[in-house]
Amino acid sequence: MTLFPEMCEAVMGESIIGRARKKGVLQVFCHQFRDFAGNKHNRVDDTIFGGGMGMLLMAEPIAACLDDLYEQLGKRPHTVYMSPQGKTLTQARVKELASMENLVILCGHYEGVDERVLEEYVDEEISLGDFVLTGGEIPALALADSVSRLVPGVLSAEECFEEESHYNGLLEYPQYTRPAVWRGKEVPEVLLSGHHANIRRWRHQQSLLRTAQKRPELLEKADLTEEDRMFLEEMKKSEDL
Image (cartoon, rainbow, N blue to C red):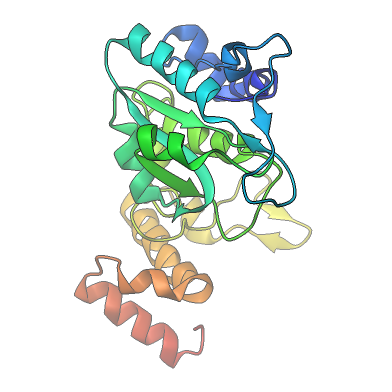
């Protein structure tokens, strides 16, 4: 739900998500809540009670758009408002949202949205981080993309995302492609060996190492085996950590 549906369609109509929509694997609809303004100028914002800079999105156009959407669906779907006040988005929450049949994402603009419509309709607020943008479209597109790619059939196989950063609590291992030697830098020999068990072990260890180097706080929540812990201790002793 946005004041800029063309902007959202331009992103969600391309690449992997766009192909999934064409195949019918995924449905994405961009709703213009200005269409529900109910006045001849299609105005959806007004000044803020109590004073203050900027304009605020009015409750009624958003509520009317949501009411119409709920009627079309015959149910009330989970509704998210993109806001810097929300909980920071994580891969774990993305997986939970991807399991839902329907998801509505509301994009704010100007100084935000009248609090009453948030209280009445919004189930949760989500943030991409502790910063502010001019509107909610970019965060909403990030959420829509991250959720959509976990829908069965959008990617070619589950392996496409199961080994990615954050999916299993660790950062992804380094990856390489041809040529095997580039500007004097060689691809790790194990990746050229064809020994799949050794490759899997190397990749897992590299995930552990990369997580410890770049995001050590993630290891506190990761489900580590005794072998994992021993490997990390060895890396500390060797000063690779």
